Length: 433
Ligand code: URA
Image (cartoon, rainbow, N blue to C red):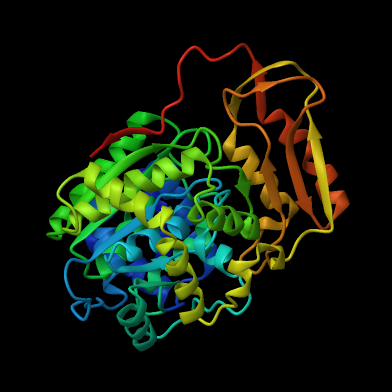
């Protein structure tokens, strides 16, 4: 078999066989196939798509590059959560401590930034000392001790995805349904949880821009999950503006800490309650979604969720004084105000543009080897439906390089669409598959 022939076949719109799919997955993981050929194949897949059968074979081949992690050392039901990626999406940092404080183990393998979206591991890097590269033994030890662990996908869990992810991130091949479904499901199915809750983002800042494709992606992932005998639930949620106000690594961790202290933005709080109550229900901790929400609200108001975050940070080697005093997080040398030139209401904030602007000032990677500026990012001062007057601050740009800040400022301003008040109220949850 030759990689050239596989690229050509997909380029010409012909379905790949199971053997061809296994060949490139295995070959790229073992570093026999070079980046330039894999990039060309990803672009061909991006342009031509994959059938359901190809997507399922791709997922299986990716799982088979690694090991299946038996979670039976954790007592009771084991539930896992994953987001398809958004801008300002720090939900895992809020949800994890809340769930663990309710007594349900939260064993999560997270990822780094992808395209214009952020990644939980990059965010956690902003807490001094926090170690996300754990051995399987440490992962087990920490979960058993604290009920919560957030770490990097170990080298042995779907290693194909780790390599694909890094290459897709820098070759404009992220937002393809089959590549997303196989990436998410290969990781989730490699961990033997009892149930999986997927937050499928839809909108101008998500990889799926419209409801039809978000529901189709959800259906594909539920079908893959269930073909492996795993209960899988997708919640299709809004990404037509950044989640919360903060976009950028340290800035987002600070917002997550505020949320655990009961001072969070309403959309982030609502989403955490929705996803969290579904996790508690599937994890047999509660009998209804409403009971789950009440339990989650209780661990926020009594401080147990915040204490759980401190336990998480401490058990993974992080400096908990950052959590107690968020002024310790590194901050940017420049904070520039973005001023509105118009009066009206915020009709839309193009979240993908906000994500790309954050990337442009250093909050994400331009190449596989780029180093992230953890303090850089954007803090919105206005959200969709807010009233705005000429001279009001739309956002604050945090960065260490004034040239870079200047280069994104007008693009960021253009991402705020100002006009008449929207007729329809904004929605956070579009449906459950
Ligand atoms: N999240 C993933 O894990 N993979 C993708 O491809 C997109 C979002």
